[in-house]
Amino acid sequence: MSDQTLNPFKIAQQQLDMAAEKLRLEPGLHEVLRWPMRELHTHFPVRMDDGTTKVFHGFRVQYNDARGPCKGGLRFHPSETIDTVRALAAWMTWKTALLDLPLGGGKGGVVCNPKELSTTEKERVCRGYIDQVGRILGLTKDVPAPDVYTNPQDMAWMMDEYEKITGYHEPGVITGKPLPLGGSAGRGDATARGGIFTVREAAKVLGLNTQGSTCAIQGFGNAGQFAATLAQEILGSKVVAISDSRGGIYNEKGMDAQKLVDFKLKTGKVAGFDGAEEISNEEILELDVDVLYPSALENVITKDNANNIKAKIVAELANGPTTPEADDILFRNGVFDIPDFLCNAGGVTVSYFECVQNAYNYYWEVEDVHQRLDKKMTRAFHDVYSMQKKHNVHMRMAAYMVAIERVAEVMKLRGWV
Ligand code: NAD
Image 1 (cartoon, helix red, strand yellow):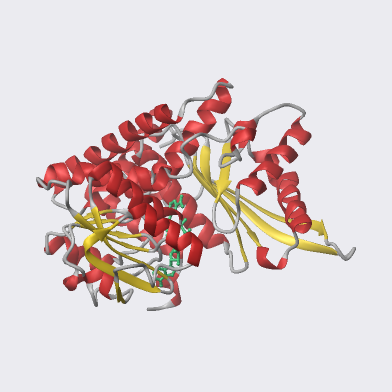
Image 2: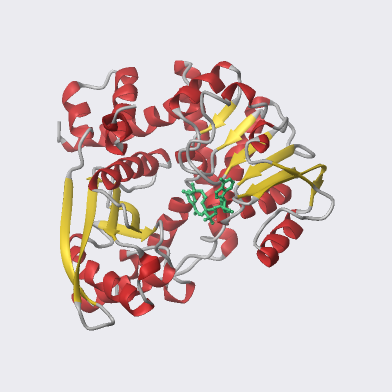
């Protein structure tokens, strides 16, 4: 592959091009959608603990705000590039549209290695970024959230800096905040819970009874651990295999999800769990189970192993676990794949609920959050499924088509094209 094809922004544009062709999108509209509407590049000073000053480089991309304020995470990463941020901002535009949230898509990044920063230096990077980028943020303009190597404490500092600059309370300027500072109940497990709701709906349309069904989970962090406990609790699924970066385990009778989580938290690994045999991270993907949850890395289902996938449903909690060639193979083989930007959209949906509660200055009980999340995920699943049936395409293409059609519709209504 050439460098050009690996560029994430080029990939995002190609995905749009394919969906636009199927939708027969007007050329003018299609061209507008290929580009971010606005991007801010900043080079800001930060005082380091040793008294020296360093310049940090950051971005905020507002890809499209036709449907509402931009929404998307903020990453701190040493190899962050503007094209990665552009691609992620495009994907956020499609994701918010797919869930029918009244939001657009954005993304931000600072080029830095947070592991090399002290806590006080990290705080000053967060505040320095907001000093520059805050002018284009706001509850009605653009709302960041945590992403790779940023966390609720970082969001708290950023919100505080924003409020210091503006002089008024506006907690909804950022989501993923700690609970006492306006975070939403139910945010912790929202990604996995949303994914489980989509699996429940997929099982219904496929005529699969989830009670006593089997599942395998690759990756046992935030997404994977909640997927295990909630698959057991909501779907009545048996967790027969899990893995993490240090290896996998298998027990055909099923393993207690909470005990697995406790074991992982205590020992830092899943290998060695009582009564389970060890398997590799490659084998776990090819097990004969009802549902496979890739919940770790990108590009794990490829043209080399897609023909060996025996799961009836692949629920992509991870971002980008399936390559485009593998998508076609799974579709041909009748494996039902729930694409990442549908399956893992529970997180951004509860982030949106956080903004709504901040704007109300009134907070919901966790049960209300779960119920509203269920409604949003269920509706999005069936919108995609109907599109899939209508055009006989795989679920990922159908999801792009639903999302892009929605963004295009409001752009037309606004008279932008
Ligand atoms: P995490 O860091 O909490 O957990 C990642 C897990 O993957 C760890 O258990 C790690 O050991 C495991 N892992 C790493 N390398 C592995 C390998 N080679 N084989 C098997 N397991 C391996 O991350 P997370 O928040 O759970 O995110 C996991 C995926 O879900 C990512 O793709 C992320 O983008 C996606 N996602 C997460 C959220 C969220 O709210 N947490 C939202 C949307 C998407």
